[in-house]
Amino acid sequence: MTPRPLHVLFVSRGNASRSQMAEGWLRALGGARVIARSAGTSPRHLHPLATAAMQEVDIDIAAQRGKGLDAVRLERFDLVITLCDAVATELPPLPGSPAARHHPVEDPALIEDEHGPQLDEFRRARETLREIVEELLRSAAR
Image (cartoon, rainbow, N blue to C red; front, top):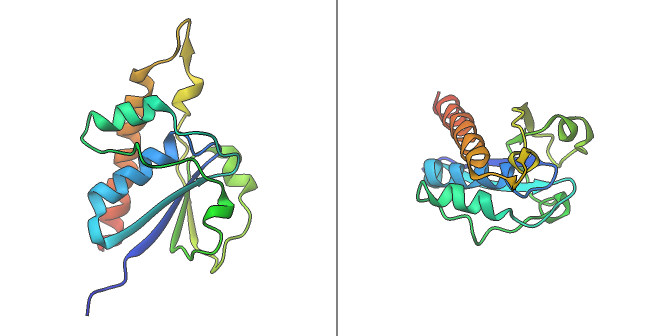
């Protein structure tokens, strides 16, 4: 019998970059072993630089959309990973009381120079999120 996939929810404030990139990584690296979702407490549109950064590693998140917790509130998750400090303290209870982990990652959209957010910041966040997802998959395999 095939084991049930691990259901994981990544949550950030806007669900515009960090949680979307983490969802993309988990889908790409976890395959059928996982069901990956993301949501935000104050959802916004997917940031185009998040899409560009992920395309550089051949992961297409362009079809993903920013969504709030209401969009996933009826799903049952095994694990919820919060990616910013504010969300870790304001996250409402979720069905089934899933395990929770907190891995703060700086929002690349908020790191600006005189030209606005830069792709290099999204690349840094992308690689940090890859490490978080790889560790999750290693720990899930134990």
